[in-house]
Length: 173
Image (cartoon, helix red, strand yellow):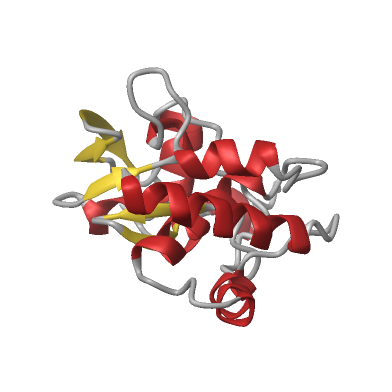
């Protein structure tokens, strides 16, 4: 007599259902068929072909995945794609305009505000929000606002300098 294990008797779980999701990313409407549990970060990187937002800790603690959703900085690793269907999403790839770098991107280059570059997209996206929200009155305020974005290479003084430079340029843009 042959015995069958419990695993063999249990039917395999069906693959998760997919749902249609439309996202406006960098000014372009994109349609996806996604598992409703898919994060915005995974959607951007794996389905939209936009690898600029980085997967760091995948727990919302490092800021490497920062994007803008309706103009506010958002941790894409903690955001379900389905929850931002009616929002405007901007990634590092969509920050500049007409082939030109955004003033913050240029300021990061000018001030050598990156070393390995892994955290740079998230740093830049948070830095743009820092300026837009008016948190640039002094270095301490900039550091406090940017404290959710970690840099293992410790380029922090240069990041603050880049934000100060871009803030002057963004005021005139």
